[in-house]
Structure formats: C-alpha cells, structure tokens
Image (cartoon, rainbow, N blue to C red; front, side, top):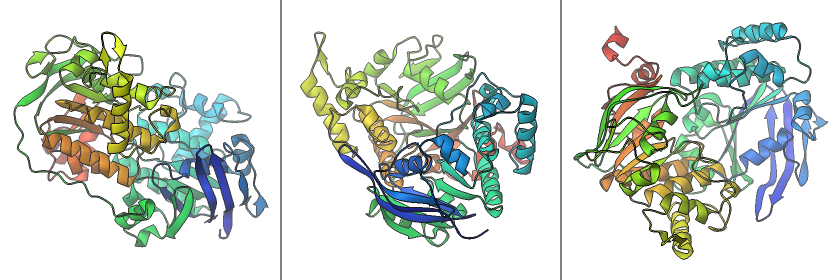
Length: 505
C-alpha cells in the first residue's frame, strides 16, 4: 500500500501564554513508521491529541485517506481508523485482560469471543498474552501488550505510540519492534514518539522535528546520528554528561536483610536486600517496572517503615523514622510518579518547594512559613535546572511532564543531600534535559553524596553508575561494576538470572 494516509496543514493551537502548535504541516504515508521528535514542551502531545480527537485546533485542517478529518472525540478517531497507545496505561488492575479490552470496545461481544480474539491477535503479532490473567499480576511489558492488542482489535490504519519502550527490557523492545514492522508491512502507518533516539534510528523511516510548537525540520533517522537529531530538537549543541574520577569513601547507607511485605494486593514484597553505598558513588539499580522499585524507594524515604536495623544511615538505624526526620539527617528521595506523588498538581511551584524543602532549607520559623525564602528557593530551582515556566506562582500541573521532572529533581539536589535516592530521573524528558539531569546527579556524587539511581533506561544507568544491580520480584542481585557489563548480561540480570555464570552455562 502506498500513498498519503494522513495530511496535516497549518495546525495551530494556542493556550493562554503559549502557542502549543504553530502552523504544523506534514504527511504520513500508508505503512510508514514516522517519528515525531521534539524536546519537552515542543508540542508533540498537543499534536497527537489533536489527531486523536482530544484537542480541537484553532486553525488548520487534517485529511485522512484524502477525506476531511475532524474527529470531535476519540471515539470518532477510532471509528475512522486511528488508535493510540498512551505513555500512561489506562487499565484496571482487578480485571482480567479480556475484561479490560472489552471496556475499550464500543459494542463488545461476549467475553468468550473477546478472549478468542485476544489469543488470535496475540499469536499473529508475536505478543504472548493470556486473556484470563488478572492485569494486576502482569509485568509492565505485558500491560503494554494489553494496550497494543486493544488497539489492534480495531484494525487501525494509523497507530500512535507515545514513549512505548520506557518500561520494557531490551528483549521486550525487540519483540515490540518486530510487531511494529509487521504492522507496517501490512499497511498500518505508525506515528512513533520517543526520546530514545537510537531506537528512532533503528525503527523509523522518516522523522518530523518540532521546536516551540513549530516544525523545524525533517530527516531520515537511518541516515542521521542521534546527536544530530537531538541538536535539531533543541537548536543548540548537545551537552554530554562528564563523569568525574572521584574515589568513593565511607559507607553512608546500608541495607541489612531488608524485607517488607507488599503494601497492597498488587504490590511487590521486598526480600532480603543487602547493599551498601559509599560517599561519591552512584549505585544504579535496573529492573522492569513492578519488581519492587516503588517499594524500595518507600522503604528508603520513610514512606514505608521497616523493622529496626534494616536501614542504616551512617551507622544509625533509621527504618522507623518518618520522611522529614530522614531528610533532616540527609537522606532525600524523588519518587517515579511526579504528578500527585512528587508534586501536588494544584499547588504552586513555591508551595511544592516548601513541601520537601521546609526542613533542610529552613523555610519555617516558629510554625510560620517564610514565603520570601520559599519563593527564592523555587526560583533557584527554576533557574538552575532551566524549568520552562512563567514563574514560581504557577501550578505544578501547568508544566509539561519533562519540566516538572526537572523541577522535582532540582528541588532535591539543591538541598545538598548526603544520600539521594531517585526513581526514573529522566523518564519522559528530552535528550538535552536528560543530559542536564544526569550531569546534576554526577556532580552531586562528585561533591561526596551517595546516590541510588533506579531506572529502566539501561543506557542511562551505564552512563552514570559506578556499580549496577538488578531488581527482580523484590530481590536484588549482587552489585557488579558497571564498566564492561553488556546489554545481554544486564537483560539476563533483569530477568532474574542473577548468577551470571549459571546464566551463561
């Protein structure tokens, strides 16, 4: 199948104070895998929401198969053949796979028929999935398969994918790519959004680059370097994080047989974790989502208390202390979920700065908040970490995901922690912002802090970590020096093959 599938002409969408899309025009061909690139806040989300019927443009027009295309809502977009897999899954943990998929259908057939179709499609496209399994028991990769199969049952002409590999192992990424290539060969066009530029180079045939809401260029990713694409996105040279050669020092954090029950039905129990982290060291912990990352951060931050002696900070047991008490002692943490956990959506950036900085930045006196100092702290975070916002009085929810991430990470780092625990530090942020955050983490370690970086981005962990360990089903492998580890070895560790000699046997 050849010819133009989707044509965008002069799409413009403005919000108070910002033009999200500025006269955007480009085409997607039938069967083409087309990348949409841009830094955080470039307008990618607004554009795909327009295509999917979630946003109505101010001006401009769209054509689908040479016919005018103005979907008033996602239902109309789906009926026209447009499907979308969002970055954040919309699944019900307590329901099984078939029930979740049926909820996305306009007129679902009986459950037996849905289950049969799920099996049929999953086998055809190499996405193994049991329709009877409870979603809460699935891995992140399996949950993504549910979302993809839900879309494939609609027989889409265009499949939009937003950051689809952020929660996948390298092996799962390869399975996904095989599926997308098969769909492409069958005539389905794919609009692919990702900040992982090497993946774009491996998968996509064409790319449209947005900057500040406008199209600034196109390229063939197969013939363009990741660095060149990143510099097209930001309009400047890309900074490459530099790691200082600093000797690690004394043990500052120790986990001793850390065990904890799952906090809820679909959580993960922590099982006998034993690690030490030294001053000046970055310990990278990899793992597929849902293997205990959130529980580990909660146990370290104080959100989840543990038995005495399991968590020690400079030799002092802290497992029974609350988060603010641990912060006062120098142990700070940034969780994965930025909106609603790391930041209160409807509070201003100044108020969000106060929430975690009140102790170490002395933002209160005799029970009264020191708003002048709090605003100055928020402004310092905004300036130092290049947070794109009109000012500290703006609500957290007004920021793009990547800019809120920069604010959350910067808020903790500027409190000069002795130990910094961070989960997914660059999740969903563009190449330039990711480089800046990684450099800030490396600089923090170079100043003598101990850092635990939990991430599903293996390239990130290999770039900044001194040692690497894998978290699988609540168990932690023995940390190994990061230098020299291969992607294949890491993939096996993530899957639970912690004994590498046995894995190679």
